Image (cartoon, rainbow, N blue to C red; front, side, top):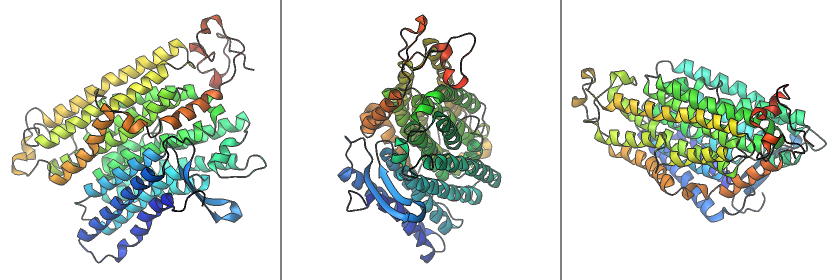
Length: 542
């Protein structure tokens, strides 16, 4: 172990895992004891990570901190190597908060409660492991371990089509994981120094062809998780069939693994390939935003509409990553944190609504604001945050990405105008489908078949507490963004600077590109991917 006497990171990874192993020993048949046990474990782990970061994490240091390295399987160079920096630390805290609240939201689980909480705690460990892993094989191991609990949690406690949704999820994500292993091993075994350490992988001098192939492999693997069009189709099925607490973890944490990994691997380790792929990421981000918004507008299932909304919002993460600006990458991180909180709140409240109505079809609802005023108020606040209302965290994240791509010197003016215009179309559609959702569910005449007047329908104290724990940071970050940005601002600036440093030096520019620092005209925005065309002369790179 390096520079640490107390293994904080190892502790927050293995505590839920070790605690999960004790669940079968609990003498509890109806689940009353095991749910409290799981909640105490989650709270203890959240407290441990908050204390550890508060006491030992240096917010002014951009390097990997709290490093812990143990030789695990020395014959193949497999080490238990963990550490945190500005892009992993806030996501770890996000994981701890959302998973703890998801356990509290699972209070009414009666079917196989021991197995349920066992899987949730294993998932808790795995998702923390993904964010702290500094060894390629350890990262892959945690990435794979996370898949199994999600598959089982959907297939056992999901809706009517749960087996289809769970099978689709595992096929997409497991097949995509192969690309992580192949691309990672290609980088690890290149050159004389065989290493799986992520920092050392970033210091190697790879040929461009290898970088491009590895980048493409990582993009496919992480694009499934993010998700990126057209690798997204598992998400609406998984969300619509998963129970609300599992949807909270899926949307709040698991999607962020894709964005985190794109920054950690594609940007940091493969900066030269990132230059060539960046225009593609921008285009895919725009497609995500517009396609996700149109798809959400056409959904009548409440959770499928929210799932399509998640696809749309993740497009901003891609655009920020490809902007080559400090503000754009900062916005990507803020968008991941913000969306994690907002999506977790909305999926939780959709589950609360389902508990009262026993339906997710919006056309079967209506008029519930009068009998469920608290749920209506919280649902409205979450929806306002999702549509980027000023004063909410969603507004700050999306605005940062907008400004980041608009001020980028890498792309020509026509390209940036097109991106901003199309993205604005998605932004216009977002309030339409969210406000339409509120209108269908809460306004108008009530559906007589729901018999809401005979139910104890409004939010209970436990449900209000969960929603407030998510809505308060949403409003806090919206009013004072430094609550979130201070944790990663220096790191995102360092990563963006490194990416800009990898940009080629231009020795020729067309007259129309005099104001374009890096010589990418609007017609040349894809030149790194598609090569020269007869219509436009490409800049000559030294």
